[in-house]
Amino acid sequence: MVVLRAILGLLAAVAAWRMARPELWLGGIIAAASLSDVYDGILARRWGTATASLRLGDSVADTTFYLGVLVAIILRHWPVLQERLGLLTAVLALETLRMGFDWIKFRRFASYHSYVAKLWGISLAAASVALLCFNRGYWLLSLSLVLGILCDLEGLAISLMLHEWTHDVKSLRAALELRRQSKELDNSP
Image (cartoon, rainbow, N blue to C red; front, top):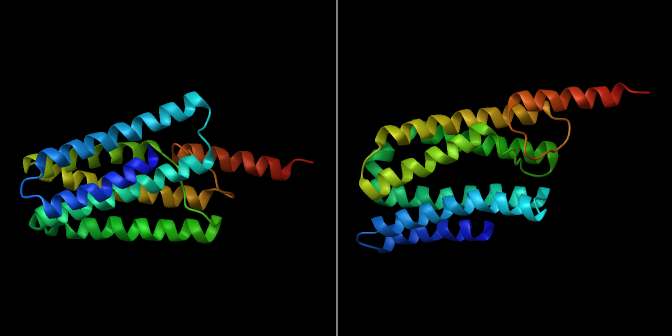
């Protein structure tokens, strides 16, 4: 399912580029990717396969998918995106900064799956469907980009707090608790 999501991102870009009226296809692609994102985690936990590498792969697949959706939006709705270029640039710059920082500090990318990241994912899916399928929801796109900025700032703050790479850190509060536990272990006899 993780690989499927990355492939669906490519299909979204191709559909937007090659099809005259891809709205139905794009809606189906985004719905399939969203369902895949929800159920791959549920199934991995149920089957006991929710490993650190799978969680990291999940994050990479999400990023790959939404890069494909971004290409679709650029191809189909550039003027709408151009009006939000400052927000988009901030998201892309923060995402790049966060990934670079995580790589330098941990030698791998973060995979926190925080509550803010989940909210961002839901808003991205909703904004993408509204824009690509119904030519509406411009405010939802703006909201989603703001949530992306908040998500990346939270991810950067979590990475700054943690001493070692950890996946599935749900919030800044959880990161603070992990940091406190790590300090207690360091100070124990």
